Length: 204
Image (cartoon, rainbow, N blue to C red; front, side):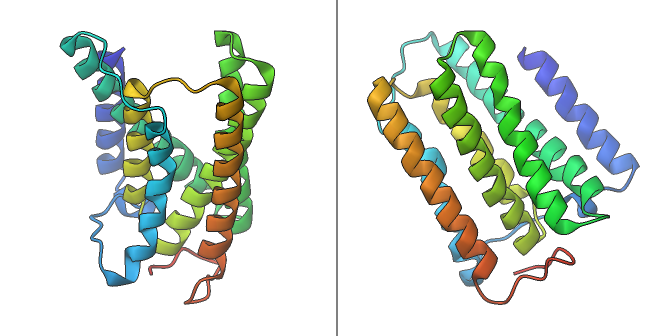
């Protein structure tokens, strides 16, 4: 699994270099500064995985490979969803790109039904993923950079390897609160100054 993910990552990096897409996809270097401190709000999303604590019960080798796999998954999914898909859609409409890429990211989690996950949990996860996708899309639009999304996504997946399990009631509560947070944070990203020009990507 890890080898396959590593291969896909290398392929995407080579493809981006050959097609000179790194800048268009938002993969140029990103540096935090005082004007971009609002991005710290992204840390709330992965921090939810800390609620039930961290548990290191697997062998070290398994933990290492699982961690690497989760980090690569974050990179690959962001490059595909907020990279290629977003880039293709925004040629027609930036609003369409934001909405469709977020919906696609959310609906993609329906696959968890086939792993035995409860329908209600899956529905909540789809809505939560849509909210996260909305946040990531607006971060991309506002900064013109994909790295904050990649880092946050990878951190979510990385911590999920070690996080403890919540009760069903607590899982539902936490997920609903996180959905609300994502919607509020998205509204903030949309309305904060300078005004967001939905006709193009812009930098802070």
